[in-house]
Structures are given as C-alpha cells and as structure tokens.
Amino acid sequence: MRVIVCVKQSCKELNPFDACAVEAALRIEGAEVIAVSMGRPDVEDMLRYLTRLGVSRGILLSDRAFAGADTLATSYALSLAVQKLRPDLVLCGRQSIDGDTAQVGPGLAALLRMPVIPYVLEMSVTEKEAVCRTRLGDRTAPLPAVLTVERINELRFPKLRSKVGVTEVWDAETLGADVRRCGLAGSPTKVVQSFENQSGRRHCRMISKEELRTTVETAMKTPRVTLSSAEHTGKRLSAVWAVGEKAAEKAREIADTVTVIRETDPTALLERATREKPSVILFDSSLESRVLAPQVAVQLQTGLCADCTKLETDGEQLFMYRPAFGGNIVAKIRCTTRPTMATVRTLEGRCAELILAGGRGVIGQEEAMQKAARAIGAQCAASRALVDAGKAPYEWQIGLTGRTVSPQVYLAVGISGAVQHVCGMESAHTVIAVNPDKTAPIFDYADFGVCATAEEVFSLLCEEK
Image 1 (spheres, helix red, strand yellow):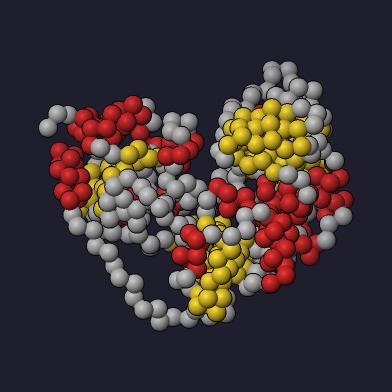
Image 2 (cartoon, one colour; image 1 turned 60 degrees about the vertical axis):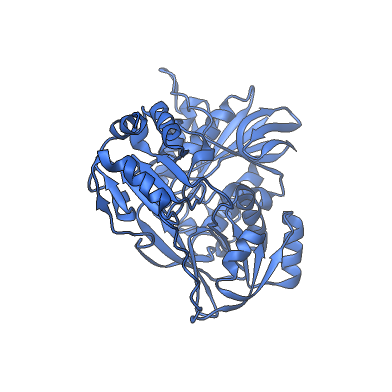
C-alpha cells in the first residue's frame, strides 16, 4: 500500500497535526510512506529528518512560481504531485497552526475526486477501505481516499543508527503545472490590509483575588444590556447566498437579499452554484461547513476566506476580516474571483451563563479547575493551548478553531489573550481575567482583572463561603 502524507513546515518546525498524520501512516503495516511538502529549498531538511523515522521518500515541491500560494493554489499543486504518485491513501493534518483554515485536506480530496474523512481520531485501514472514528461520528470510505488527522498520537524519534533516505525536489515543470494556477498568481484571496486587533477591547478594573467570587456573583446578577441594531447607513450588497440559517444571520447584515441554501452535499451545491452564478456564498464555521466549503471552492476555482470575524462591503466587493499570523493581528481580505466564499464565525445557539475557561496557565491544575467550576456552578471551557497540550477535550475549545460563546460571565484563567481566543468570547456580557502576568493581553479584553496564578484562584473559589 502506498500512503502519501502531506506535510507543512510551520514556524520552522513540522506542523503538529501533520506530525500526527506521519505517525499514523508509519503505523500502517507494510505501507510505503511518502512525505510531500511545498515550500522553500530549506524545507528539504525536514523531509530528510522524516526519512530517518521510516518515511520511504520525501518530495519537496519548490519553485518560485509556488510562492505566496493560498489554500486554492496549494491544493492545486499538491493534487498534481498526488496524481503522479498514484497512492492508495492520502493523509493530511487537520490544519496548520499558522493558517488554521483546515481547507487543504478537503480541497485536495475534491480536486482528486476522492472521498474525504475529516477530523480522524482513530483509523483502521485495509486494502479496500478506511474505517475511522471522527469528531463527526464513525465514517467509512473506499480507497483511494483522503483523511485529515487530529492530534491523536506522538511522532516517534529516529533510531540511533537510522540513515537519511531519499528526497527529491519537484518544480512546476516536473509537475506539469499551469503556473497561472500556482502561487500568488493563482491565489484569489488577497490581503488588503493588516492591523492590530481592536475588536472586543474593554476597560479593565483590577481587583484582588479575594474579591473574585463576589465579583462573579455580582456580574451574574447584572441585567444584560441588549443593544438595538442601529440603522445600517453604509453600502450593501444586492444579493448573497447563505448555506444554512446561521450563516444567513450574518449575510443579512451586509446584503439586501439573502438566499438560504439548504444543500449540504458538495456536488449538489457545486451544480447549483455553477448554474445560478451567485456573487457571494457564506457558510457558518461548523465542523461540517469547514469540510463542505473548501470542496466547493476548489471546484469553482475561487477563493475561500476562513473563520471571518467581520464582514464589510463597499456595495460591490465583500471584504472579510480574520485573525492572522498567530498573534494580535487582523487581516482585511478580498477575493478577486467570483463567487467570493467565506466561512463566518457565528454564536452558539445556547451556552452556559457562567463559563470558566482555562489556558496554558492551568496546566497541572486541571482537576482543581473542574472542582472550582463545580463550586461556582460554571461550565468548563478551554483555550487552544490547553486542548493542544492534551489537558482538555476539543469540545471545550473556545476561539477561532473552536466555539463562539456569549455567556453572562466569562472567567478566563491562565489565558494569554491572543486574538484567536478572544474572537470566540468577546460577546460575553462580563469578562473577568486571571493571569499572573499583569501585562498579559487578556486584560485588554476584560472588565475585571486579577493578577494571580490559577492555583491561587481555584483554591479561593473552592473555599466554603
């Protein structure tokens, strides 16, 4: 069996999700594992390292024509490499930690006309099919297929006497690529502007840790102010498609006419979009939409912006805003092709009124956090850092790649305050932040702040009143 693993170097290291995909491939008995990556020439060093682990061959797609690729152009180049190699199975990490879009796996599957199984937690592969447990339930697909893998294992270390295997570099000519579909030239999504995030900022009043419980109780009783929607005086788009009712709520903010689309099959949606030619298609950011949208986008050869936190229009074009570059930066993005497609952040229909969320600063205090949550009647949640560390389930994750909530009180403990997390909780009525670092960005997005460790506040919250 030939297995291809698509890998990416993120922040000069192997993307953690892709590392799990490599390990999953190496555990398939008797498989010939080939790692394929796209990047600069120095990425070949990463591929050489993987050959020491048991990867049979490493192939780097490297050409100036590939530079600046968005997810559409990336999926196209990878699809050409996969077609040349004719595998039985393709594995990808669910997403990269720098882009966070989770679009390449489903998009690649659509270009290859292979079935896709996303969000894989466990997998069993035979000569004919892949049987998986996923975040969406049990899934089975005939081979060849594309699987996107969660962080489900630890990548092995090389053996002491392991040797470097074969690596190759393929350029656009080797792939037979149409350079108009590669790199920056083939990328419809363009960053118009990037700037420091200002959304969700609040005036924080610092309090002592001893005041925390009383502050939570008072905030829970504070009447929630519902702001009436001001009359929209800016420009609007004439018509927008919205896949599902949640996306339609966002679409109505920027369009005069919203057509709610019920199709959730990629082929049916593709056929209708090809026939009716909408100018904009919006999706919500659910797990299902994150798979559906890229499959449709690559076949329409159009741009797809993921996890938009804000939409804006000049009456002609749609401008999409999303956190970028792994920090407190927001990018304003436009699409040069039609239809413009985007997944948009939407609030959960229901969430707890009091949420206790833990971040990296809670590691080692997970049991204490759950005990504190029970003591104050809160629902537990987590930042991506705590989930990625394996200390909290994905279902707890709040933020760009998790849930978006709007509780009465959001108590953030040990969370730094990156935009990727803040965009999932900025609709809370009252935000209380706890962090031992008084300069932590989370205090910029909180109403009340406590300079203390997780251990200190959890101990106080668990005390008898």
